[in-house]
Image 1 (cartoon, rainbow, N blue to C red):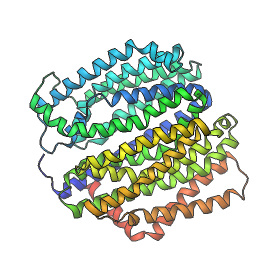
Image 2: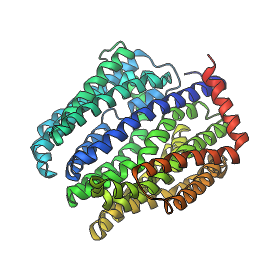
Image 3: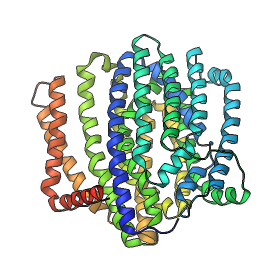
Image 4: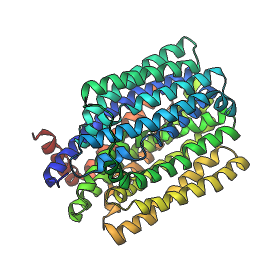
Length: 486
């Protein structure tokens, strides 16, 4: 793809981030309601089984296209039909083979992870969903290359709504783990139908050795990072599922999910859009620096206060909602996963920048180190001291954002991290201190928790506006002008 004008990149990036975050906010609200309802209706053991099986599904996804979709998105030149069909053909061969193997081994896998019949059915449903998901890859690539994230969000919203309606309905009727099984299949079929209505393409099978070779030159190193992340995270979760009771794994899943929700809502969406934008700006360091600092600021602006409110308000929910008290043993893990998320909100954008400018090997070396530390240290400490040590070690691993920051500043991009996070960080600290004092002096009820939540957000953004009025108005003007422009 030819270098785009800076203004066009800015416009598309701002529109993409704004639209995708707003759609994703709606999705997260649905997920919040769904998770809150299910944690009341279902047992920690049921969540543990779902956590194990969904981790297996996540593992499968890493081997579905050997980085081909990432290479297609990253490609600066126009993508030809032969490249799309070669990628699609290669992916279906890989995915088809994996699905056959997994379905054949499903009962053995169920026995290995101590899954009962319902757990095995859930695993088989995830395998089918994995195949259906692979059919969505090329339409998704087409939309991402065109920065059409609003259309992708339509698919995600539909999938989320269907999943939530099905799983809650069946959970209320007492279906237990089977509620997840039916919901997973319903979600996959819905998403496949809608994405082909939104982004149809001239589907077909083909193979070009030259096209595949070119795509793999970027895809293989890109995928190596993903595979190492798989080994560090999802495979380790499966290992924990082997050595820990399902209930303790449920506590880890509960804590990790809630702590990482702000990252999934804000950071992932910013990263998804800015990866392509940074790649196009890699030869213009001045504009790249500005774009990166703005992306860090946007992430910190929303992630920091949400993380702080999670730590402050969850103990109150454990106390006020009797059926929610069963999750109180997860609070220590929740706190350290929140610390993990706080550090990741700076670490992940930096590694995203390194990848976008072609410095994948640097992130690969760090990923190797993180994987070794997780398996050697976290596994030992979990077996000796219990499940909370996983969250503690994972938080300290993310302190490695410091050397990555130094490498970026020294060799690649001299940006100001403190400038980007200072205002959100100061405002978050003030908000939490004020809310803590208020919480200690008033009777606690569900209504007062709601008031604390609303008051905290109003206070936070009020402080942001007072301390950073000029910067905030400038950013609002920039967003407004680009959103309203044709």
